[in-house]
Image (cartoon, rainbow, N blue to C red; front, side, top):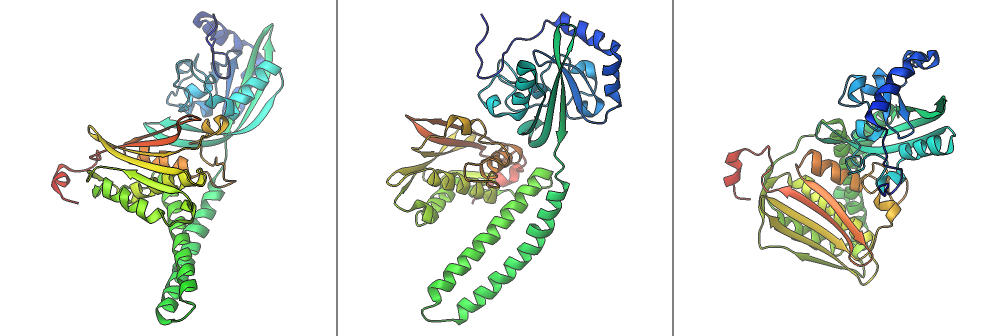
Length: 387
């Protein structure tokens, strides 16, 4: 009986046939010409397993020799976070939304070439990394056997990063700081009916500054140039403070915010990063909640870890769940997809923790973050410091 999957078939070619075809294919002159191309490519079987690959394709994975990847599927070689399932690349619910899997399905099952933009998360050297790429899959036959040429061309984001650094992270931030300074001075000197309006404008300006700084931090984290700032922090007190701050927030209008937490939960970690993560979780939960409902944050110790769970009664559609941590994906519109992606990036790459979620019509949606009570980089002398 064939194993049931959520998308593409799980069957694989027998190892002896894989090795046989690996030896036969180089005999075809047209296929030998592929090695003259600089574009990263791989030849895959009708079961989506790699037989041959170019040096530039090999550079994406941990292996640097062709024979080390024979039999692997593209997502398995590229270390996609969803490829670790029991049936491998292409078989999970998340694979339904993967452009690479869709391109392979079109080429191998429909027999027509596919050119699709895709984005996925990979785990490289223990760290989460976002990949955006153009995938092209072209089917071909050798005798009566089907194969496909799988080409992966990462999107060049150098220009985008230049603009972000020059405009957002420098000019815009400097301009916003100047505006905040002017508004602060005006608020201190002005009295009368304009006070409330000036205070509102000043708060909005500060909010924009925080948003720009958040994107700057995210950009540094993606490049690997971000460093955690470790300090003692009472997680329970921090979360209670964030709940109090968000209760009068416009997103919380006609909704309830509740917290379940111990009297104190001391830990050594990065308080600013934790604050940003919890704020994102709370805002996302409030945005997904309807009037009269309750968003609950639960904080609790779990052995050497602390657990932060944010629950709301809404449910995330299945097609959205599969892409929830993908860079750039959001249900709120283009360019809004850094929230959950950023949470995973910071939790796993910088706070040595984990994040996952559950979402069902009966239980609602819960995002859960687990963080070590003592960050691995914290020196032992810091453990005795009282926060």
